[in-house]
Image (cartoon, rainbow, N blue to C red):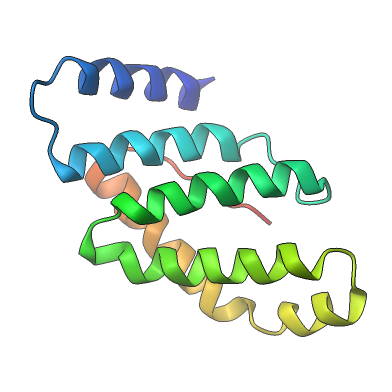
Length: 123
């Protein structure tokens, strides 16, 4: 509920601006991503496809500090989506999670510090 309220507040604030800065656009996109990610079930392909779409949108507006981190997260998510239910490929991907976890933690820290948005961990 807190994330939804934060999202609504950020969207309303951004709508009131005549010239939205790049950082503000990112924060609005990030808040939308965070709100969507709360209810994601990685076991449901439709949920995963949606969160991947949202992550790509956030990656486009991400500031330089986290743009590469978003690239790592999106690339990994694309590989996982492509793997589908292939257990061998998923096992192979599970060995690559350290870099993704590091990137996602950097995103979460930046989100909290710069945008005051709590990004949920998607496992």
